[in-house]
Image (cartoon, rainbow, N blue to C red; front, top):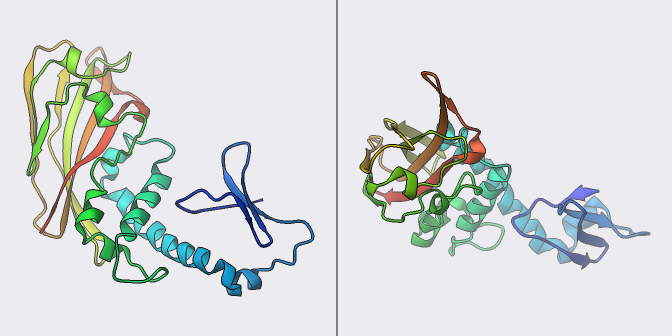
Length: 251
C-alpha cells in the first residue's frame, strides 16, 4: 500500500482514493476496488488540485530540511529521536504557510521565514522530543540574552533531571547563521561546560560567538550526559540528551 507523506493526517475517501491509518499508525492510501483511478487522473482531476498544491509545497520543504538538519549536526547526532526528520519537515511546512503573499501551490519557505510568526515557530524546537529542555532543566530560572546562556544558582542534583546512569553533564551552545535565500549556513560551536552530578551549587554561563555573516542567527543549546568509568567519560545514548532552539536573531 502507498504511504501518505504530508504534514497532516488524512482519513476518509476522495473519489476513488481511500485514506486510512494502518495497524502501525502509518497514514496510507489505496484505490477502492474496481476503481478507474490512474496517475493521469490524479494529476488532472480538479478534485485533487488542493492536494497536488500541498504536495508541491511540502516537497519544497523536504528539500530545505536536508540543510536544516545539518545546521546543528554535531549536536543533533548526539541528541535526537526517531521522529526528528519528520518533525523538521512539519516545522518548515508550518513556516512556509506564513507566506501570505503567494497563493496555495506557490507559497515559498523563504518568504514565510521572513515573518515574525515564521521565525517564532523555530523557538522551542526539540531535536529529541523525548527529552525536552523543560523536562531536563526542572528549575526554569535559566535565561538567554543575546548569545549568552545563564543558569544562576544551579544545584545539579535538584535542578537537572539526570538519567539513572549519568554522573556528569555537558552544556554547550551553537550559533548558526542561516541564509534562507540561498539555503546555506555556517555554525560556530562553543566550549563545553562539564560538571558532576555531585557538584555544589554554581552559576552556569555559556557565551557563544556568532558567525560574521548576518542573516538569520539561530541559537542551539545542547545538554549531554555521560557516565564516568575510571578516568574516562562515556557518553550516554542520544535518547537521554537534549538539543533545543532557544533563541534567534534576525539582522
